[in-house]
Structure formats: C-alpha cells, structure tokens
Image (cartoon, rainbow, N blue to C red):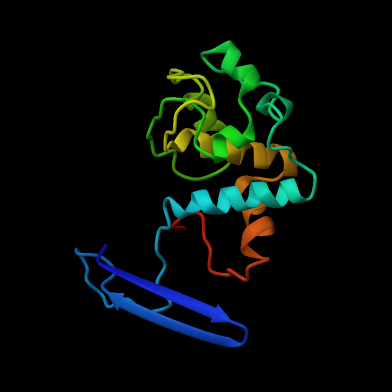
Length: 173
C-alpha cells in the first residue's frame, strides 16, 4: 500500500490526513480528494446493510437463504436448505471459494452467485471458519432481492447516505 488518506469526524470537528503516493507506477502525492479501491472493506458495507435490514424486520439472520432467493441452488442439497444469512456473515458457510473479476454493470451480483453456487461444499454450515468472497456475493444478492434495487443503489440507501459518505463509487467510470 503506497499511500492512504483518512478522515475522522467527531461532531463538528473533521480531521483529515493523507500520506504516501497514489501508486508506484505514477507516484502522485496522496490528498483527501483521491479515490481508492476499497476492496474487502466492501464486506463491512454489506454486513452493515444486512444488519440495517434486520433491524427493520426485513431479513431474519436465522432463516434459510432459500426464503429470500427461491432459485438458490448449491452443489449440496442439504446445505442449500440449511444455509442462513448468519452463516454468511460470521464466515461459517463451509463453502469453497472462487476469485474472478466480474467487472461492473447490471446483474453483476446475480452473475457472481451463479458461478459460485457450483463450488464444492467443504463442510456443513456452522462448522468451520473460512474467509470467502462467495458469502458476500450471496449476501449482496439477498440485499438486492429484499430491497428490489441493484446492489449499488441499496448500499447507497442503507449505508452511504446515512453515514454521509458522498464519495463512494462502485466502478472506475
């Protein structure tokens, strides 16, 4: 990580600090207006969105995912029936992982989920801890199904706007 910029807000007090360079190929000095790809921090946004939906009674962490995604199919039928949002959020899905850049655009979560559903079931849900992209692809798809909105819109409504994060973007464009 060649550089970073952070902002801390407490009441009316705002403090910003920037360090390093934007990247090693084109080392421009980092400032508070630079955009950074947040990568795995997106998982925190997904979890927060799910919990906001849970607080509103729109998602139950203990209900099977099939209740939210009726066409949800896994390679293991028993796991398919048992897997819950809680398993996804606490990283106990027991599912294998897959890394592919699906880029951006409409139905990106649906496309991600389609491919990751074919991955092998390593263990039953709730038994083993795995840090997986798969679980957040599925959780993001559930957010879309519950809200009836594309992932980006749902995250903006449930996370970005309430936190006044007005510089969040979902694609380089």
